[in-house]
Length: 298
Image (cartoon, rainbow, N blue to C red; front, side, top):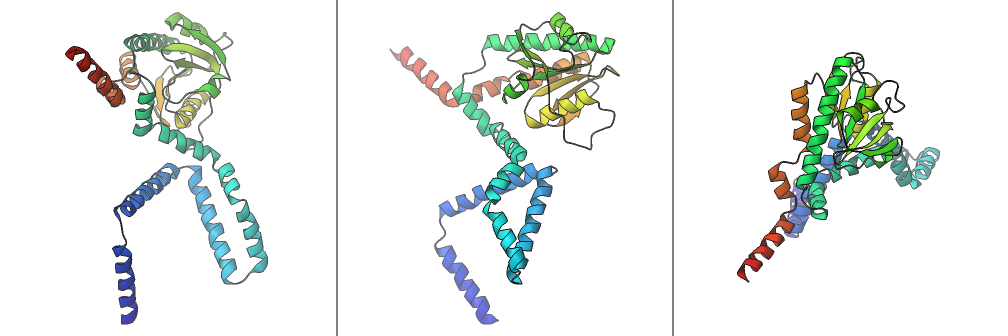
């Protein structure tokens, strides 16, 4: 027993003697990746799929241990195509994970490097659109007119837009009212707002896969949750039955907005704050500042 302890200790010390700083970094990165994968998979269908894969691996180990040749042959054949099978089975979860990475702080930073700071004209356009949507939602609330309005953010919604009709129009309360008029051909679908303009209408959104939501929520609310689960879009919903205004974000819906609270919420979500604008492209900002200093010296 003592010899085994001594041997294990010597082995551990031998490994520690060869331990480098890069090994620590390697362990931290792998741990971070595994932690985030577990976090993404929790409370989703992927968690059950992973449990099924673990059971298959245990069954394969048992077949190896007891020399169950036929069962072992089946598992061996299965594992030959396991990579392709995992890509097919986990396709929605892999797409969601990649989009999640793209929407992270690192993704936003590189997006800032690829583009410039949001121009003042664009901010004014977004402000104008928010005001039009708030006015329209307030009118819909009084008349109990159903509406579904999607504000595109960093995640592009080209596949959703392709299901509807391109409008590319300046926002106005009257335009939004015409789109969701119950006799209009586009009123059943979603309206997509891009860069402060009404880009498309009559778009079909994916329904949420969450079965635990309230039975009071109808198809519009489920569609709003579905697109918010698959993107960083902000979705405004007006209930046709009650006239209540709701907002869906990151797979969560909040309800009972007033005109004022809706305007505040949309501005907080869609208008970039001053510190965010200055932090998005620090390298380019530094370069511009350096050029100005050089010009002043000359």
